[in-house]
Length: 246
Image (cartoon, rainbow, N blue to C red; front, side):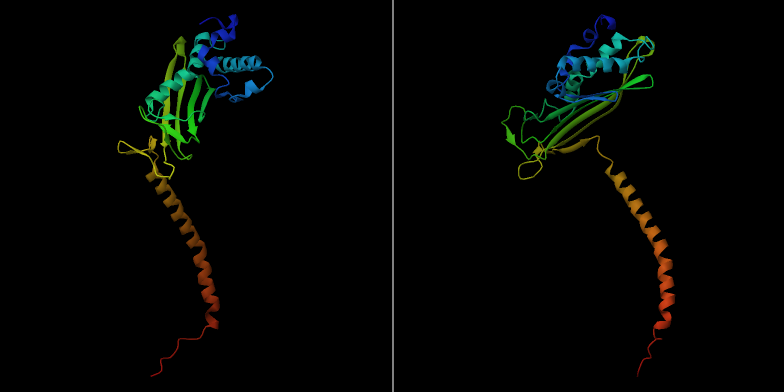
């Protein structure tokens, strides 16, 4: 990678520069929304601001300590691009290699944030609101607009002693394909209403049950003394036990 001082835009991976303004980026605390630069007065100035924010977020995390590390900046910018998104789509069951969705429905996000001496990154793709899909070698099929397809991943970059290492934290996907009559699509015997890894439903239900039980116990603890006191107060106004008449 060229030195940072020779030109910041030359250090960043070209795919990242192409994807800028085609996706939602969050660099540190600063957002760069999709299409915002194109709507602004100076797209080139917005791109330079994006590059400078990425440089500032990476500064201090590389082998050069507090100085710029062009190799780290190059690696981060490559990961914050369609290069990572293509790998994510390939590894996910619901990736675009299997299910082709109607154009214009995808929203792509990238996040880069320095935490301590490491860089935390996130990538994600959300496809929602589409009304058509197709399988490999099949015709386009209509579907309900509540259908969705989501993939995401989080990872951390470390750069100890000049060697960049990547640690995967999580990878998730969720998919729901519904026919126009609101029946779930079934493909090869599999209902396309899935989440990986699966949500801990049983644990969630147990937690909710414990909360409800605790609320009922608290309510009983508060109400029972009141009922006993009311019974004591109204007893004088009640007649004695009725005599049975033979």
